[in-house]
Length: 101
Image (cartoon, rainbow, N blue to C red; front, side, top):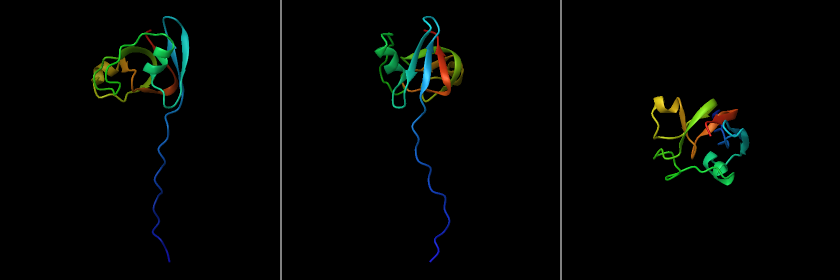
């Protein structure tokens, strides 16, 4: 008996780790899969206001300076995403993302 050839669904992959660079202090903080930038910043003693932690409210929007953010929010317009990132839910497309902190 033959079965139809179908492509197996691709497994969901966890986002890769990346390094968060804080421009003002030159701190470098690793962000692992499953961690948010907001959590990593707060654990490092950097005060970040958060409210929804789901990318809806924009409370945690932070200016980014270098890198390629993977925007996963629904609160920032494309114009705002060109300069800011919601650190509660965004990731990085590259190995580093520099924030204006």
